[in-house]
Amino acid sequence: MINDALRAEYEHRFSLYDTDGDGYLTAQDFTERARVLTEAVGEPEESAKAQALRAGMRNTFDELAALAEVDGAGRLDREQFVAAFARAGESGALGRVVGPSVAATIALADADGDGVVSLADFATVHRAAGYSDAQAKAAFAALDQDGDGRLMVDAWQAT
Image (cartoon, rainbow, N blue to C red; front, side, top):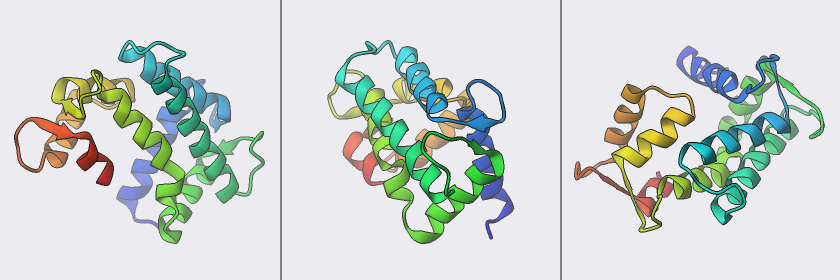
């Protein structure tokens, strides 16, 4: 059983991932989400970063579908999505489910590839992902443990 705050977060994610608004998630929704994020930062669609994000998002869908016992060519409804995410967290599989897409998103946020993400770059990706400026700033502040206004990619990935 998951708590109400976690359920609300998973339901919010479902809404963000449901790019066509049909109430179900398919692999295409995850591919579209990757396209939106890539486009938001001006990354070329065929770049290595964009390809890694598409692959990471596809991995997330495939892993969630497997946890929900839904064929990878199928679709997840809101409750299946929430239950699959909860199952991933409870079983210790969350890193396997979201790790590749998180790593690719971090690389995308590191626009110049220098291993450092600024608040502006972080906020751009988070706004494209459906979060507000305030949410992006709060998340950045939580990750910027030394308060220097920069996130080191390695430290962010470890978090």
